Length: 332
Image (cartoon, rainbow, N blue to C red; front, side, top):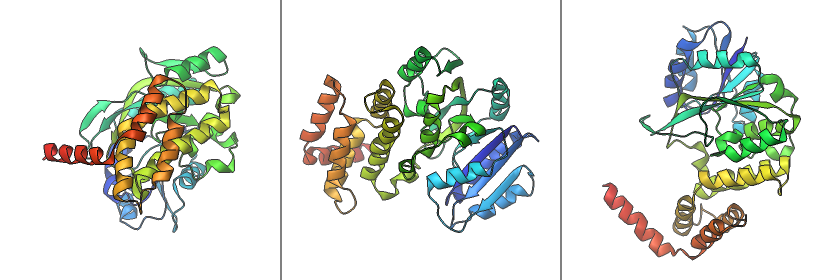
């Protein structure tokens, strides 16, 4: 088995059928699809069962408890038999020919491959391309054992997806995943994929940037928002920074670039929305937590961080509320 497409899911019965229909026609005898259902209470099992009748490469495991995203990811990879694993979100759509391109790429036997995606609306209407690297002119391989190539890769990073934040972006060798040991503090961050793969960087891995768009990513379906926008910002900023700081050191160039791309992923306007929500719904949204993570987000020196940090502080909630109201009126 060369490739395992691993899909952890929870209550995505309304999406996973379309996901499976996009990828199952592409699989061959050297590819398996492994679905781990982390305790769904909807019809996920029934949706998968229908596809299993026609695709012997599809395997479904159900656990009767909700393990959480980190535990479910580790579990589904432990069930895989492939030389390589491609984690895939249960609401994304694989492009035609994607599996064939991955099978061709992994012949070079590098440790990690990074693909691209097209960002879509909730209804899967394409919005824009979202490359994880800047200034790329096609496929490239970075030997991170070489300090200059590692520096180049980290400096070229445009989004946190370059550092394996998005489930469906990296394709990686299973033996690399299995041999890496991570601290207990990485569990519960929701970033176990980034934690394990980034922890392999000091060992001198090769990262191959495919420069290929292989999937459509569904927007507006962020399960991390279930406990509010402030907690979502905490996960995206504080928890991910913890991964980078622990592996590379808070004062390292690698950790700096991780913080830099997080500021691209989570811009000031998102934090201002969170500030407004904290004022409107303090029982759910914790303003003290938000203030702490904003200070952390803009802690690096520089005029832009100074401006954003203080713009957040002085922005009146009343003005934010008025702007939100006007936006809703124009939307109508």
